[in-house]
Length: 185
Image 1 (tube, rainbow, N blue to C red):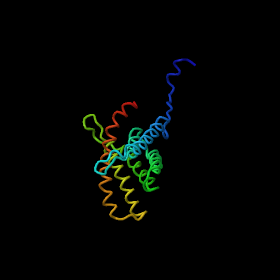
Image 2: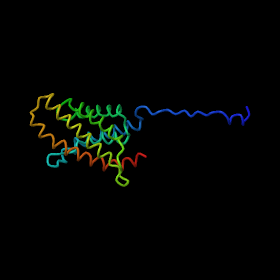
Image 3: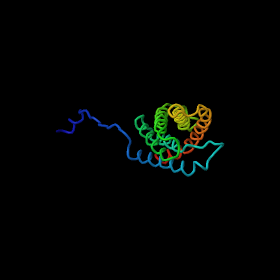
Image 4: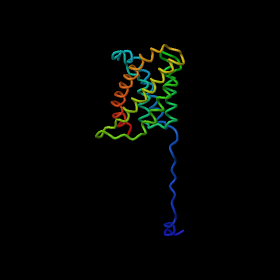
């Protein structure tokens, strides 16, 4: 075949769509969830601002979802894993499976919404973490009251805890997101 005859042939570029999480993403999620568990166990009891403390597990799964830009299915798995990790800590068993599942799904949905940047700073991780923590903590509180028949006064006690924890987590994730994102490039 003559070289000039090849010029008229149509070329097809085959691409493969990324399905699921890559090994790099899985390692990052595992490291961040492990770090969240260690921080919750050792540091969580030391950082106490008026009875409020960060929930490092929620903060770390929000960070992981933001860094890998996880889709809903991947976020659901991350949320279930986070709920499983929470079972190792004292508290109410099994409620975290639902609350972390919901928080992770909300994070994956919110991280996809375009928000304007303030200068060069993207505050999407902070905003998404704030709402994700609120959803997770809110669902945990509702389940505590209705599923386990906790006293209704629990709701009044948990609302400020959930709101303050959401704010602390949002600040924590925002501060760590930028340097981590830069190192992952």
